[in-house]
Length: 453
Ligand SMILES: Nc1ncnc2c1ncn2[C@@H]1O[C@H](COP(=O)(O)OP(=O)(O)OP(=O)(O)O)[C@@H](O)[C@H]1O
Ligand SMILES: [Mg+2]
Image (cartoon, rainbow, N blue to C red; front, side):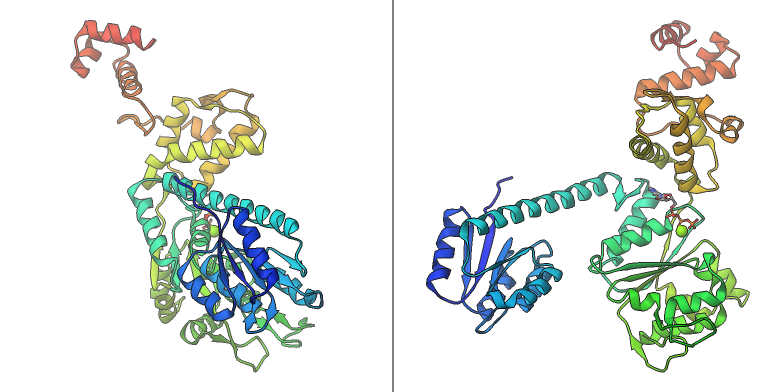
């Protein structure tokens, strides 16, 4: 890929100092654009992707802060260097808080500025490389750390990608440990809200009475113990995403309030009269059958439909066992690093046990299982059947066959089927050859070749 020159936009009035700056930047090897006023600058930002913006913070007809916000909207990675007269240092500090990379006071020290820009550009390159890396990881394994490549998971990714850019309310359903929380953060991370808060509330962990004030906040004196006014999670999540986990656990009165928010995007704090408007995208999750709770009259039907505008169902691990090898590899890498170990892999017996097991705790159970095995493993070892937790070690091998998984070679598969058939015939080679429909001599050759005993 040919690298284009970093594009620098200078926004400052015409002056001797400005032309010196433009010349200097060209000499440094940048592609340099210049706008003498705000209007021209906005036009340029509309049409070009700018890598570095150098702007006077406050001069005739230029509002540097506004420019900064527009530039960041167009290119979140843009590096902004503000230029200010001494008196504006306070404003410049505010600019830094708004995301400016640096500020310089006039008269400019050009060699100092050069260092700042070089640092800014290399920082930017790093950020872009990280983006690129994450994108490649996503392409290989999934989305924002969600691992799996089976068609059922690909459907989940597609749905997440499709709805992430919108503000639509999402309901995630799936059994415990299937990755609902992971999916919720992937939706946020892939949405334009990614730089705003992602706020979570797990309703199962809280008493019914607390949930309401946690969500909506309360005024001082709203109830015994409310010594001061507190913002709720909705207000904290303003501009971002609120994830309500185990939404089935909320009380009927909180359900009414939640419905009102979804209909009107408004709320009041407990004990308060002021109506507060917030811009929040809501994601809810449940591992219970919400539809059934609706039928039993325990969950409001109107709320159910408001929550389930988009419904994403995360499949059980047992329904997508072909993802297990990929998950195992990822968790091995993760816990090798975390525990400073160098476990090389798992034996075929272990993989078979993983593929046979039912995984009632889904991906969380698999992850915990691997962490436990790695914690006790010898360095550089391959995890064997004896390292498995007892309930996995002692499960009955499946009688109807064995699992072939992605990552095995044709030779692995051939070796495995010969081993299994030999075992099922009590090592009777004639019978084995007959079942496999190969000649006896071929069987002997393969037993030798694969060192089967
Ligand atoms: N597809 C996946 N790829 C990688 N890690 C996953 C995947 N699914 C789940 N995990 C991991 O498993 C653990 C449990 O996932 P998570 O908390 O998202 O599940 P959950 O569906 O919210 O479960 P619960 O209903 O019990 O709260 C986490 O550590 C998560 O990172
Ligand atoms: Mg969860």
